[in-house]
Structures are given as structure tokens and as C-alpha cells.
Image (cartoon, rainbow, N blue to C red):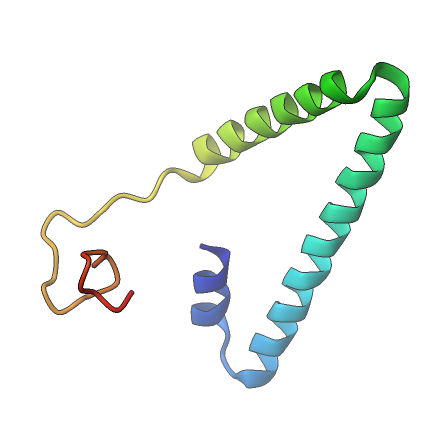
Length: 93
């Protein structure tokens, strides 16, 4: 969903490149932070408990963000020319 927003909100190629770089920087920073955090927590309470704790935190944060932003809903009537949701066996998606 973030990729679609990024592509549609960019006014030009330079802005799209900037948004893409910011997205990659945020993704990598989050990955490094969570990996470092899980190592620190696992040293104290063990691997199973640390992964359970991290899963619980992610569950709470995900539920909160879904509540804050709202869940996207399908249109009342589908447009037959729009093949974005077409996942039938013969589709090219």
C-alpha cells in the first residue's frame, strides 16, 4: 500500500526517487533496530520469550495503526475494465 501511495503522490521522477530513497532508509533502519533489539532482549530472557514479546508488540502496534487509519474497503460495484483485483487462474496478475 505504501508503494502505491508513493508512486501516485510523486509529482515527477525526482520526487519519486526521493520518496523511494526515504522508504528504503526507513525500512533498513527499522530492520536494524528490531534485529539489535531482539538480540539484546534475547540475551536477558531467552529466544522464545523475546520473539513472543516482539510478536505481541507488533500485534498491538498493527492493530492500533489499523484503527487509526481505517481498513480499505472494496468498491460497491466492481469495474469490469479494472483487472487489478483479478486473480483468476487465467489472469496475468
